[in-house]
Image (cartoon, rainbow, N blue to C red; front, side, top):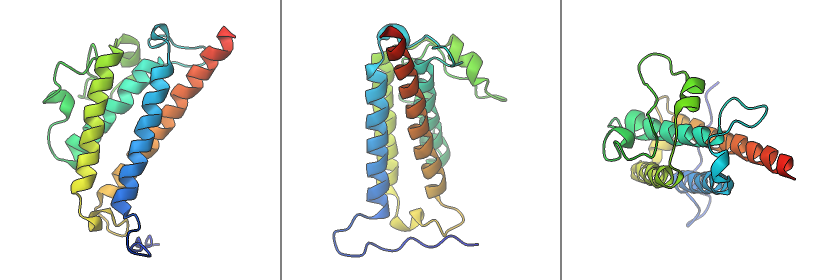
Length: 178
């Protein structure tokens, strides 16, 4: 079954697919950042009961994966973590990219400076927005076999899901402190 083509906006001035996607990323990024900002500094590297990954590491993972996906895969260039932000991501180590990544082991080793990671995240978000803004509207037509819309949609879902996980960890911590 072939997916239906995206209809053009129904009236002049309506949001385009590209505008809608950019807005969705802005909202997802804002929610993710608001959630990580609510974490007390001591909770960044702690694994709450029922979790095997500290919330700071999960945040770093989602930002790093977005960088790899947009700047490395879709943009066919160098991710920011390996180019303009090399050595300045706020992460004590970048996940190894050779072989299968053991995210859990990395999450327990990595240490992050929240302010520096947030600056790197803002740069990643800006590069995602610029990438989407530069796309032709036709590039987001899901009826096309080769389309960045598929990876961007998966990425948007990942950002949202991981924000939910971090938010749940925050709620667990709040409940234990109460």
